[in-house]
Structure formats: structure tokens, C-alpha cells
Image 1 (cartoon, helix red, strand yellow):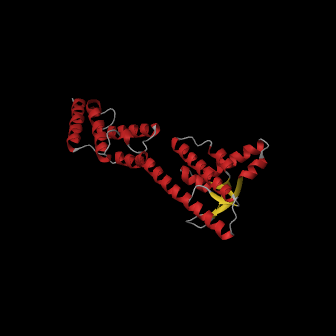
Image 2: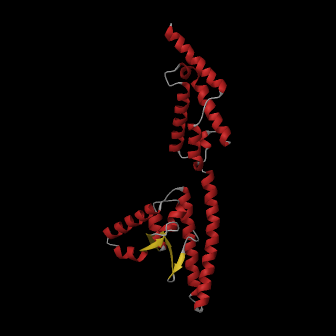
Image 3: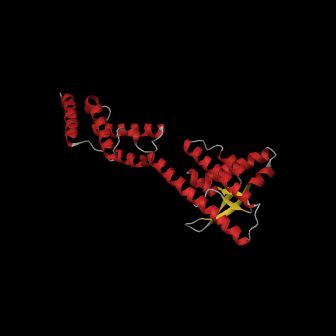
Length: 245
């Protein structure tokens, strides 16, 4: 992604591909959001406004070179679509988009009072776009840092906690086993301690969202230590001896 907004026909616009990349969404989800807004505008008798602020066009995918539909949109169109993106990260990105729209709009207005040749106009636009690209690079760096350090959400925490306990329970021999009844707490603590040491964290809740899958894989491969395995075996042997008697 080179820039958040760009100039076309003396108008500042962005497109659905850029929005998908910046907000971390699938492109087809963004285009569906746009289509839903256009449909609502039509129902409200504002189809002309929709036509002025949204333009369906195409882009060529960088990998398979096939052509896919996308939407170009004005600042007003962008604002309408992004209105539903309300996570803290999305709010930051919306502010950046709005700032870039304003900056590029002011740039165009400042040039309208001057007379430039076609070559000079092209150079000015390229300069403005280059400055925007530099700003985007800085934003992307901040977003990457945020993504790498952002903690899991509550749903992921519950899923990890449940999965960890199920793995430990299996290692103990099941919920009805003597080992589970006597040393389940010890087994759970051992699993979480191993994971904390592996990821360099003080609680499983501190696992970054970006490492969620890696942490779940670690849990799936967890095995009790040798001393704990022997203790589990001894506990379960006691149960077997009682049953025999």
C-alpha cells in the first residue's frame, strides 16, 4: 500500500482495497459494507448522492493478475462506510484518513490560485503523493507494533484456558482419575508455568493476539515433566489397587 488517499480528476479519493489493507479486513467484506450503504441510500431516495460518492471500478490482483471489482469513494463516502468500524485501532486509522483527506484537499485548493504547466502539476501531485506514502509507512510501522503487542480478547482467553485445562486433564487420565482428584491443581500450574517460560510472560492472558495460534499449538504439544508423570502414575495405581481389593 503506497498511500491512504490520492488525487483523481482534481478530487481526493480512496478505494476499498486501501481501506481493507489499513483496517485489516477482507476486501470482499469491505465491498459488501459499501454495497449495503449504497442499498440503504437508494432506499432513502439518495441514490444520486451514492453515485457521486461511490464509483465501482476494477483492479488487478498482484499475485494472480486477475481483475476484481473495487470501489473508489470520496471523503464523504469513506466516512459513511467507516462509521461502523469502532475498535480502538479502527478509530486511529479513521483519524489518519480524515487528516490525509484534509491535507490533500488543502493542497489542491492552494494550487488552484496558481498557474502551472501540465508537467509542473504532475510533479506537484507526485510530490504530494510521495509525502502521503511516507506518512503511511510511519502509520504502518505503528500499526505493526500495536498488532504485535496487543493482548488477546476475552473470547480467546476463555478458549485458551479451557483448552489448557482439557490437555492437562487428559494427561492426568481424565476427570474421574485419582490423579485428577488429587493433583489436578499441580498439573494445571505446571502447564501454565511451562507456557509462561516459553513465551516470557507472567500470565497466559499476556499472550499477544498475534501469537494466539502459536500458544494454542504449544498447549497441544504439552507433556508433564518426568517427575509429574511418575506422580500421576502412582496416583492412578493407587486407584487401581483399591478397585482390585
